[in-house]
Figure 1 (cartoon, rainbow, N blue to C red):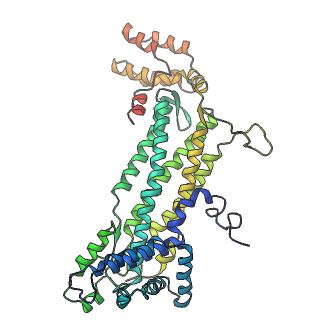
Figure 2: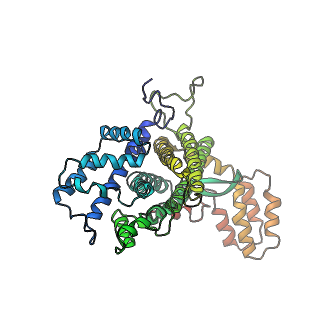
Figure 3: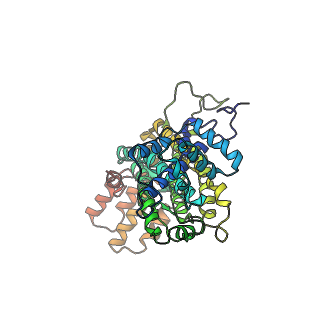
Length: 456
């Protein structure tokens, strides 16, 4: 069978291809090859600008443009050429080096200097910078915009529902009221903190040779300041230099990134489960979509499938990220190759995250608040006002305040009338009793509404 969305083994490239396609140019084999080529080209150009490297001339602008065009016009056909070279070399990075040398063979101003392509590099010098840029670009151009969209959607929802009172449920039982907007605002605040962490993350890179000591560099050019040369190069890519490495950049920053994304995903798992619960309780209804079927046998069903789908895919994403964050920082002695195959699955974690985010976006568009249901529940649970009543009693020095309310309300159904009779019987000033008599479950929300509105 030919590979297609119907024949792909992974649902990322099959059923959910339309949701994960934004990552294809970055984390596919094509994407990795292109990023490697970019690093090779930029390193060669950088060496041409190094003072004291007299064997290399300064590049003519036309040559610089030609080299850049090899990256800018890199296509699937070009990638297949690299893969053909890899069949001969059995080495993926060396294949990129040979591909680039072939491309400059007929350029008279470049071909004499082809041995300075991949100069003093170990494969990991190319790979670590390629992956750093792949991650940085994915976060900047894919993940952050999606998170920003979600935060904006949830902020709007929290604001619109800021004053919609609802019964809280601690341990699943009726508890002091809040507002639906405030509960959604909690999720927004948590996501904003992780979003800030993404902004502050430092992407590291190394360009220091086979074991991190510039061994070959210093034999070839002992008088050059290779630490500065490579730092300038790594910085020119928008990355931060890691001076202390073995053959590999130790991937600690990657672990930080994956843990951060996992935390954001875990927050969203929590959110999806809560929304699922609120739908189950009838706090939200779901707008029916023409033509959609909820159950193959029960025609009335509108299932919360988008939030279920998201929860499942967030779990898969976190399984990948948690393995990567615990595995990648570990490498035997100066290196082993276990990180190489693991890194090829980085895109899998991001793909499942994207699939989950798209499901949340879709699910949110179907939600409609059911204020009638929320008010009905609040009116059936006047006992939640036991908390403020016993607190006011404590303020005024009434003995056994908590214990009296416990005896009066615990395990009982308390109506408005029964509660008001209790308030009237208390040894409190009349103006205090009047205030308590005006309190309703709908009003007893503290500053929940203000917290939801403060998100703006």
